[in-house]
Image (tube, rainbow, N blue to C red; front, side, top):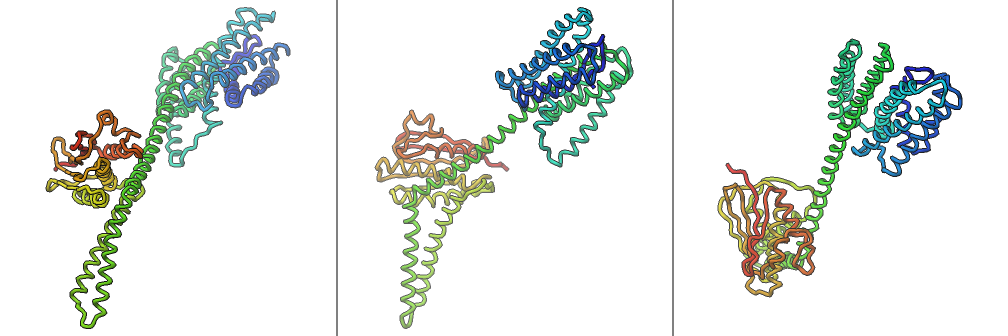
Length: 517
């Protein structure tokens, strides 16, 4: 398969796949496989080719080949940090550059060695050097990437894709066979000019399947070309010219393939990073919700304990009424109705907390703005009452529904209200007031929410970076609340901003789009 021609006892090898396979071993496993190449070259020269050269020349030739490529493999692995998985363009360039360097070095050294032999002169060396150089280059360019990608690191293909891949391979073989027959089989003078027909299937394979597709496509093309050239009896000169064109095609296909693979890998890593970021954001949002409820824990405990205490007292009263002769059933029924109302109120607070703290993926649905704001304010009311802050709600009538995750949007509203309450309480104001508004705008269609407070305001040096991570004005704050609010609002297609940071008139706003009729 390799040593097709011979010239005055010198094997001319315009196609050397064995070298490409062993060079892959050396790049994958290290320079210790130099011995494999050395022994293999001796066996090829003596046993297979029955070389007419002396034993000394055979050993010297094998040593030159093995040591040259061993040195190239060592430099590529240790000095240039070559990745045998060929995941980047630089690795393909190192492989091709190393193979070219080794082939040129061997061609020069073997030429000098053959000149020492009295049986050969300079003209013989020139005739033999070209095919030797091209054979090594094409052997490495075609076989080494194929072995590194598909043998040592065989890709795991899902069964559902195997049928599609097999059909593509059969179509590729048919297309390449037709092109090769036109180029080689017709034996016309235009064969070289038509060689560009092979670029299309190789580039298509590289674009569709990346570097793996390029490696398989180039191997099919190369084996088909060598088989036809040998079948039709092309001489060494014509063979070498075709192989030179094939080397150009191989370099093109490998570069296109690795660029496609590198881009696909970058896209896959970007998607994985984005997915991990969303998971971290969800975890941070969950932690922020717990932090909010933890801060309101005392007030919420009071909010729950108050109706439960009242319900207990009403139940006791109804019990005493029922125990007396001639019981006042109307009064007892009224007490029981009030008790049920108090229990329902406590249950509503617990339900809102449970829903607010729920864990899981965002659940998008159609949201009634009135219900969303009332539920958020019901949770915030306990903390506001404990710190003597009054909350007001001002909503426009007939606001259209919006689409989103109600828990996440409640978290934004509750976070802004909680920040306002803490700022007012920290300033020691007894007339604290937080006003929540929602209004409709039609250019573009959006619902604009605002949270206003009469707290101490926000310092100008803090205002510009208020929505960045780890930025906070609280002594024990983590600086995540507003950053999480930003992430939530932006994921809903809206935006959030500080409208005013003035003392006594602090105002945060955020807007969310809605579908206009």
